[in-house]
Image (cartoon, rainbow, N blue to C red):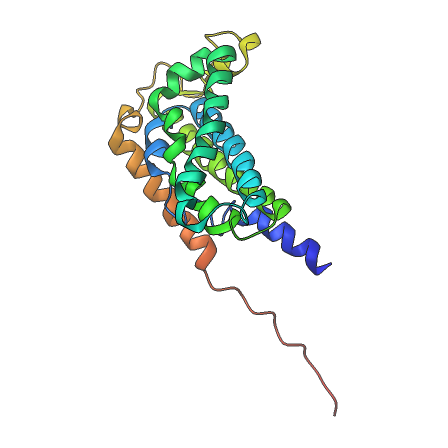
Length: 226
């Protein structure tokens, strides 16, 4: 039971308690750059999750073989290989997403989240735990980017999931859910850099409050022996 609980905690740790963006403050550059739309956040999150999972598994499997003196170059080589795979797949099947993410897709190679988990977790733990860590951190990263992108897109453009047609071609290139009527002016600042920092700060404050607030103690049982 305790082993299952431990593996569950590894999987869920990255969602809130050790969220790579909001708690560990890693990967802030792509977080702020690509979250002008929710669909961009989903695409970047899924790409990073794939690289996290695969690189964690390979680095964990090779952790006793890789010499300590050259471990960082080896980790980057492994990560770069999987990023190249992701980039080729995205270019071939979802070119609109490749265009939207731009340089930030190949820059996953030097994303601090992926290299940090390789150094801090995968190189010290078994394959299963490392895979769970990669999935959990990827889910936390994807959720954060999607939430940020949703807030900025709705307030800044009045739409939600515009660009999702780039991920799911059957929806059509012009797919978008209109949230704010066109007759109402939107807060265009949200789609610029200052808006990204503002939303990032609000979400970080919320995550910090949720993870550090004091827990309520259970009330003592009334009565007792006379």
